[in-house]
Amino acid sequence: MTLAIRACGLSDVGRSRRHNEDSFEIDSATRLFIVADGMGGHGHGEVASLLAVQAIGESVRGSLEAQREEVGDSQSSRRFLHRAFAEAQERIKRATREDPALSGMGTTAVCCLAGDARVLVAHVGDSRVYRLRSGHLSQLTEDHTWVNEQVQAGVLSLDEARFHPLKSVVTRALGADDGQDVDLLDLELLDGDLLLLCSDGLTTMLDDERIAEVLAGGQGLEDTCRQLVQAANDAGGLDNITVVTIAVGDR
Ligand code: CA
Image (cartoon, rainbow, N blue to C red; front, side, top):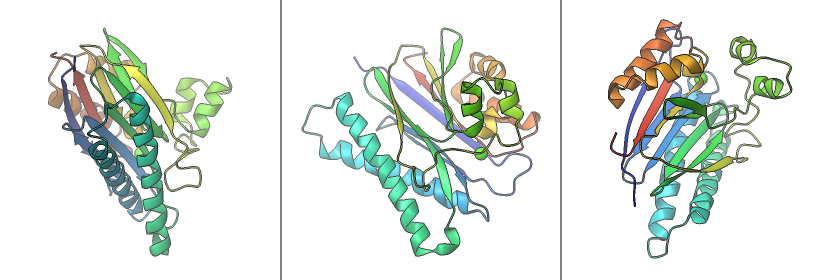
């Protein structure tokens, strides 16, 4: 049985940045959802995040198209995502080689590819995927950041990490040398699940409790996205804010 999926996304520049360097894509036909958060100064982060979203989308669609005659399984979907992130990495590197002014640009990328009743989650960097299930919020991805390494080592608390001056230092990014070192998760979807993809402009402004509160509010997806962005802006809006919400089943 294929679980129905509906999605909605919203990106906002926030209250203190001049450029929005986040990008996102919702491809409901392919059941593919991507958020990328670019970095690089002079608006170049915008180039990197857009290249990543385009490359991942095109690559996954191309792979799915090519295998249409075969039976799709999660093993091949994993391969598709690895290939898609490698393609994004290559495209950003190539753009940097062709225009040295872009050098140093990079991007996070987080991506969900839903099958009938499972979802593959791939990510590099500190954009996140959360899941609200039966009122309980779980962070599915692990940030590739210096502060998260300190949290894992017991040196920093979660709250200290959220407000740490080095909180945005990522240890992996597309465009950097280790860019295609992708984390992949293969998870079961349940009717009623609500997934959230987001950039760190949301999670540095709101703690998990507040995010859970908005997600569990029971409004439609559009209102949920708007309220998340509004709450992050109310809390300061220090960075670009991007959210993609995905409702699973007929909720
Ligand atoms: Ca950001």
